[in-house]
Image 1 (cartoon, helix red, strand yellow):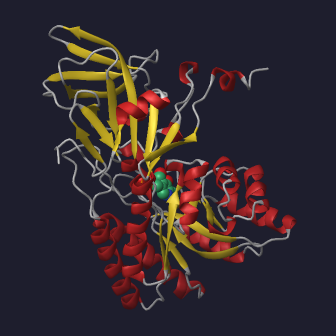
Image 2 (tube, rainbow, N blue to C red; image 1 turned 180 degrees about the horizontal axis):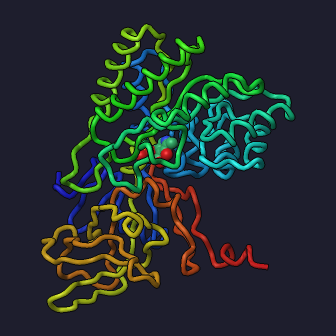
Image 3 (spheres, protein in one colour; image 1 turned 180 degrees about the vertical axis):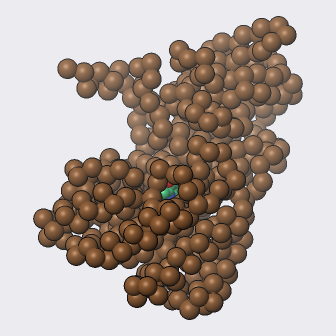
Length: 435
Ligand SMILES: Cc1ncc(COP(=O)(O)O)c(C=O)c1O
């Protein structure tokens, strides 16, 4: 495999780049650019890998919830339903999307660190299966509104175990100074547990934590499991409360560059499973149902974005630019936190990649950079097709209409066929909301 083919669904034939076995040049001709492609088999493969590894580690006492913030649209929800996944949703928009697609409400976890009373009412009336409560204000509102609606929702409390996941700060969420959840070290987690157990209109089932993103070591999950299990044991001693569910969040890393490690999900989960089983026995607590909620690692490698080159600009001694017909509006991740990507010349795969370029977008911002330091053939020119790999997670879901650019479509690749899952936005779509 070409060292730049960072996942096994990327290959080439002569000058052309193939994705999921399909010719990217033909796909660009058929659907236009910029274009998000999604490889459905890869998404399903990742769901199954998680489920079989979790089954091997925990028997039937596990759940895998896809974090739909990574990529939420109706077809994705249908795949998750067929794959028997649960869903972690973070807004009423995500809930509405997945419910419209027929995803069962009882398999939905409703996260979010600042649910308004309207959000809470929407979630209650939508009958979402589980709530992940992030703050005391939410707990009180949920308790009050559940009484009015005459229901008693099942909840987990989101705790912050105080772990630094060895990752960049913008996506590190489980540290003590996090805006998310109840800190264990600060005593808020203890107070929230006490209060949740007093609330008559909610049923506390357990605890949730999420330490960050792009984690490549099982140690990080084991450290957070240790802190959570210690807390669970103390809560059992103090309140006689038996934790039924422990959610260890998402965050498993994916390869963006050929130099990134190749994560072994099965091994990580085996190690986490062994630790949890041993530690529960040592603490004398019943092993809760264990949840993971991966987003990125389910969909990232299933995605690729295609662009057409519009301009090549060489500034001697300084920098060479390749400008494409998309940019930070469809992929803000480099602009936001310098996220790395592998970029390939989809129409010149058989030429040496001896030129060095900064690939930029068409938005009116100097920071509209898709990726600096990219090696491409020196022949690259207007009309060429450029592919950015591993864009399945947090690209479409973070896309905007900045500069009034219509968002690209999502085209699914399945069994050598392609079909539109989200259509391209039109100028009419853009103007629809203006009054
Ligand atoms: C609470 C929670 N769960 C799950 C995820 C998914 O993380 P990832 O996409 O890195 O697997 C996130 C991401 O931000 C999160 O905040």
